[in-house]
Length: 188
Image (cartoon, rainbow, N blue to C red):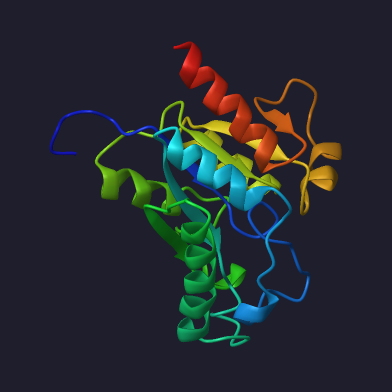
């Protein structure tokens, strides 16, 4: 960044963290339904001075389940909902590829997170990276980010598969994780 200061970034997965998870993919703006408390959590993070971004696998585009234009419309609904509640996203990073495409941006690989680093000119060491799936945690670990698991979406199932002593913090939902991050900022 031009000022030489690192923003207080928070990176969020989308499906299962901000909006409900669907095994059939979120294919239309009308199917995008927020997890209770997630919109307010992002608004609280925004008010507390955090720069919030989304990093999400969206293989439905590569699978032909919905178009890039439809994904943009889903993201427009999400950002408008957030803005109406006083929240803001500084960026939405997504991988449109199928798992078999072998791209570097599909989580658990760190490509999307590297895009965030490049866009903001920062390292992600210690930056909170909040997700509901193992692949979110693995991507965070690869860049030295602070891996946070929420138990919404696939989170409860993911927690059951974690090894003892895994470097991850667990919260019931995004609202609880956001409260923790805001409390830490107030204390520092």
